[in-house]
Image 1 (spheres, one colour):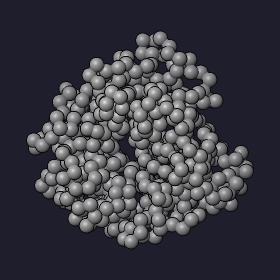
Image 2 (cartoon, rainbow, N blue to C red; image 1 turned 180 degrees about the vertical axis):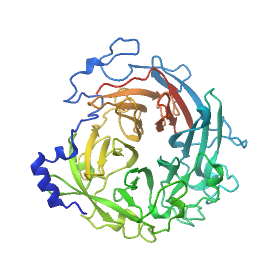
Image 3 (spheres, rainbow, N blue to C red; image 1 turned 90 degrees about the vertical axis):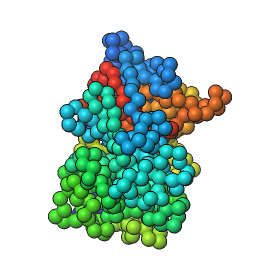
Image 4 (cartoon, rainbow, N blue to C red; image 1 turned 135 degrees about the vertical axis):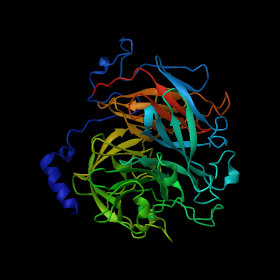
Length: 484
């Protein structure tokens, strides 16, 4: 049943401008490092040794003598894979450009990780593309794909190819049935940029069964566009997907499975290309007014009602999916990036908004979509970072995970210094790690983005990547619940 703008406006009037429709709305973050109005007990936080440090998190970051990763006191890291240094089981070097990652509980204390490699275009562009392992190749001209990393309890690491011959594997998402959906952030067709097949699809990777990954085929029912991330609603079976694109700004999507379809390992590959229904959102505020772009929201706790509009041609044979909608038909946002399923809904990141967006400029939003209420609530809003080269502020969130210790952990993909940072349930942001690998010069330093932030299934280890050259870290330390 459609949730009309009139219905939403009427319900909002009865519940106080719509906020009560989403229950208790708690701000997760405000301007970089700023104190939210709701957060009046910052002094409750303490360091691991019990000494207060005046805020949430784990205290200041300690410079790394090895020049890789600054962490709070008491924390440490281990390098699991390093492009051009570590090797796959088959002898090739670990591919470069690490991106989206998920963890899975393996046998006998093993943690399995599926790691995307965001490599675009022809293979000749890259020194370390994903190897074309026999039986696991979609398009032999493409350079991207996924590897599976096996992190054993004793610290040993093994790595092998999950899929090869895909392009620009950016983020993705894990499924409740224990697989990884890797997303191609491209719209290249056969004949473009050296490709021999169409790209811009989602592929399913099984970290437990290598044989299940043979003969890779795209899940075309989920559409062809510049995919970023995907999550699965375990209750309803819907898939939500983000698109990182502009000209016009991208969309997020909901795919509804066909009647009677049951999810499970390999089931998505069995779907017809036009199976189910792919739709884009149409949002409206508490007054029933259409919202053209999520950059219109300027206050934490803003709630929009969401209706859904069907995509005319999901395979984008002649026109990109996001360009198939007339003005006023759907709601857009700039750089729709990471997503994570948690708290009964989907957390959705918009990294920034500038002149390409019609609303207010910002350096990061995180929205929460509640599928039962069909509402979007603004949970995180980062103001424009005026000095990205100065440590202490955050901008450009990208990959995201829900922390088992409360709140969110986000990977920074902004300008200047790059961090992993947390956002508490009451409105404070705090640093967890800083990239210290300078790829520029002392005069003009340059730091790659963080990607693939995710906790181990037991919550003891935080995994994250530095995208270039491509390094995967396992971070351990005195994790503790962040007070709400």
